[in-house]
Image 1 (cartoon, one colour):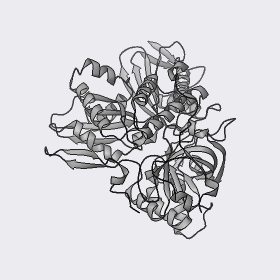
Image 2: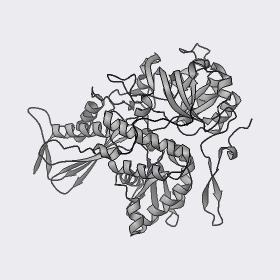
Image 3: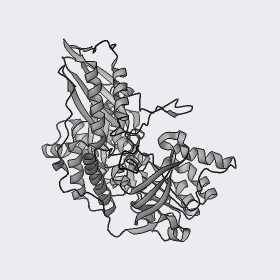
Length: 522
């Protein structure tokens, strides 16, 4: 029997959560470097450059890669010959309690505090738990005398795009996956990975898809060796077909939407084929640790030569400098979709909860706590700052969650522009065009890099919303790209399902913004 101190379990998981908050897995960095080197589409190449710089800065600064520091997902493989022991007179606790304590320690770390994202009462008040607990815990009993723990920090951008279906045995899994891509948009921050779980029961297929994401990136090796079974053949087919769509980094077009596709299977009922799809974003964060009774696990981190050749800062060529403190409608009208801007001056932040509060005040005819006239709103919930920072990592959140608020805010407040990530829906684009406003995108997954362009921060409204409170940021050369201009021309590609001669729907990309059926014309 192997005796493992329960405090070693807590210490090991807490250390792992801290480490993965600022370190990509090495295979992900290498794959992203290869994709960047091969990319010929300028917007996508620029996005990947920022992701690589952010990866390097986060590792050296030991600060989070992304402002969404994720929910803790802990997967235990508990050997049947393992028993937990207590230290002194402490009570023996279950793996859920130990995981929660580890999350609490990691996310409240004074040197590198992480953003608490978990909420309780999801159908009611939706209040933040303040310490990111509870962890999501999965336990599998296996043979042996070791405790293996897969520690994952999973942001909302990937998991909210998860898909599931029960197909007929004769259906094409590849076609089904391709049909899901239009609805997923770019909010999952490609380039990343797709995990496909096939077989078992519905819940087992979802778990297979999730766990598949945390296997090494090896698609190039598979292509060299050739597929050995149907699952490997499916990986290659999906890798080629998904990247051929041209969604690209951040949905901006280009060669690399996925860096790998992972497939995991399980036996299933003869009458069905459960299939699950889960993407992993550019803020891929996980590690595996093992405990054998000889103290806490050792967390291995890559050496800095992993980032050789990566710059220490981002300097976009041909960017227009914009003073947002002097912004007016004439200036906004001069911006064109695809143009890179460097913003300086004061902007306001607001996410889902703050938008809901603002629109409710407008509907009741009550004054807003902040004046939005000729202002810019940045969709962000930053990480808490530490010494020497104006704000912690502060990258954009997915913009289309705020789409239903765009019309009332533009119509009633004088708001000029919004900053977020990924595409807007057709109604939001129509509102932007109608009110002669603009939508700008920053790179999702480059939060620490972007925070370097924020010089001051203060809470100005709704402090009770914690990380969702409205802040005022003072920017200096904050890089964004015009994604929807005053004419309603959208940067992100729109995809439609077209029937093929075989009767199977095919995903067809709309190749440029001028062909976007959702873009309002001047």
